[in-house]
Amino acid sequence: MLIRLGYDIQFDIPQDVALVAMLHIHPSRMQDLREPDTMTVEPNVQTDEYIDVFGNKCTKFFAPAGRLRLHGSTLIADSGEPDAVNWRAREVPVEYLPQDVLMYLLASRYCEVDLLTDTAARLFGALPRGWGRVQAVCDWVHQHVTFGYEHARPTRTALEVFNEKVGVCRDFQHLAITLCRCLNIPARYATGYLGDIGVPAAPCPMDFSAWFEAYLEDRWWTFDARHNTPRIGRVLMAAGRDAADVAITTSFGSAYLRKFEVVTDEVPCAQNPFQPASSQPLQDSIQPSASGLTDSRRLPPETTKRLNLPH
Image (cartoon, rainbow, N blue to C red; front, side, top):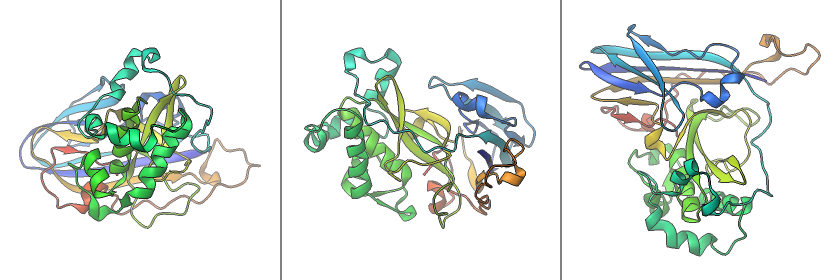
């Protein structure tokens, strides 16, 4: 299948400011792109692209005071299959983990491994090791944390999610990540596009989404404590230790969010030049949202320093 991806984000900038944006498709999905993945900045300024220490594609630029607009659109091919599931996948002993994976066992900004280790051992320590134990973590978080945009708070940590039992998408993932790390299972935060493909359309505007990945056997596997079911059409943008590493935009000064739209639409067969004519038509595309704000949309439009947008 083909999926149309896009965004339109606008800020009011009170004075000249440097920014870093993380709005490109992750390099691991570049081969699936069917159109250029270009971020347009208005007004036109010089931009510098680079790959950060986690392997994410970033764009650095300096914005003058006034209205700033970041927008882009691209087309990506997807298998149309749900997230892979492998109940035979085994945990890897710490001494055999690749060196670049070890950091995902440690505490980070939103994941207080040291404060939840005893809890994780009590809840999951006796379970058989492997895929089933990661799934048990997802099940527990999904069942014990209540989702709601009214609960959005950009400073909430995994321990606070555990105690408060409420949150938005990123909070579910932070708690699951932390519990996995407490069990010596490497886990990292992921953000990207996830449209309502193969599921009933959500009543809220389209957003970027958050999920997490756990390292089992010899690779990273997708898990999602918020939805807790394999989904179709997940497109990775960035991954890191937690949401602090994958902020959609980081401004080194004041920036006031004024508009936020995200599009994640399955392309109907009639519009898909790569789809054989004999194939069954794909599901009608999702209508672009009028206001696809994420976590921060439920908060006052305060000064944005680090805009961890995925919910």
